[in-house]
Length: 228
Image (tube, rainbow, N blue to C red):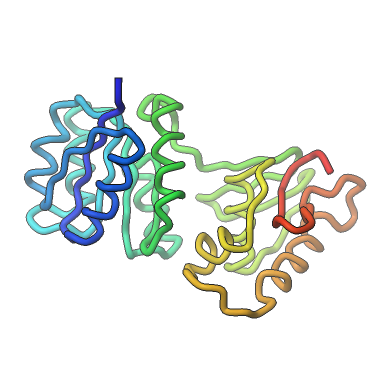
């Protein structure tokens, strides 16, 4: 049986783009263009995942989310928003969302996150606020990072870069994925910005440890993991 997704999005172009892509991937998609209609559909509890825009007419996305959770609906929710600051993302994740994706976004990333939420059973899982790889640990709420108990001081962009890598442990992360997911670029600026930041991050994460975690995959990208 096809998974059923509720898309609550008031921007027609974005809604058309997402709905078409999900339909092509075999999902059944219902759409709502405002918060009130979205809440009406969401509370029937029949969806495998809800994709929720944050800034909606009628009732804003966080209001819809609060009402859904207050009604005991545990359907996994991924919030889409142009509000991409760390505080905005943390606010969403700590107020009932299972995931948070900033606009503009790559459809393939949205698709991967939806599938992951559905696979995990979404609503019953706790919100993931601590990410780990071996002895490396990142607390998203406290914004603290440490390895083997030793604190690592990261600049904001380095924190976001490492968070992205920790969300893709043991996966090859391409430069395009990093440009989109960390810098919000949907084009290649043709600079060495990624190399510079990864070099600094590698120094902070791996220097002084016998086992490096950040690896360069020649011709493909980068990978965070225990194995070389």
